[in-house]
Length: 194
Image 1 (cartoon, rainbow, N blue to C red):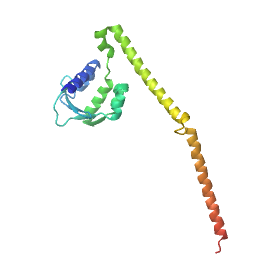
Image 2 (image 1 turned 90 degrees about the vertical axis):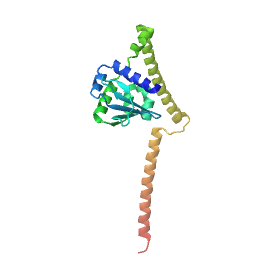
Image 3 (image 1 turned 180 degrees about the horizontal axis):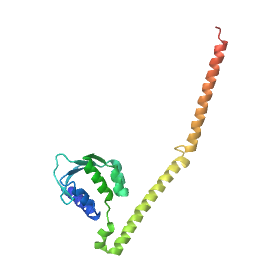
Image 4 (image 1 turned 60 degrees about the vertical axis):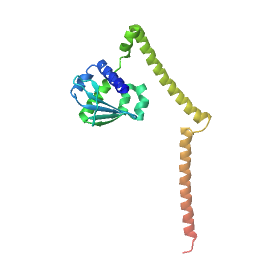
């Protein structure tokens, strides 16, 4: 299948670019790993050389299931987002996979260099990195501006200081009401004939 082949080639490419990763997986040669994606499941076996190969597996040794948080964070946080996945199965294999996934690093410049040259690859990588950082700053600023508009201009939400003052006033009113109720009961008990 196309998706499985693409995932296999991508994972193995990242393993080749991350020294020591495939060697760590060699200890688990023959073990099976299932990537349980929302619409499909992709199964792999770890080959003798420590790389992934497509396989049909009934019961995998490890299952990795992306969560919505992982899918949302993956484009921006890369391998750090993989911590948001659900992992099940053989603890030793999962520990190795976790170590390997944390080591994975895509050398974008090395992949672009044969296509556009070393200097252009370096500049494209820097441009892409700066563009993503700019997008993150813009998204943060937009969120801050939107929350400020909702609170200050549109007055759809209370400011923190106003909510805190309101809560203090409610607490004071509740205390005053309790004291007044206690005084009234005391007065009633004194004035009622025994």
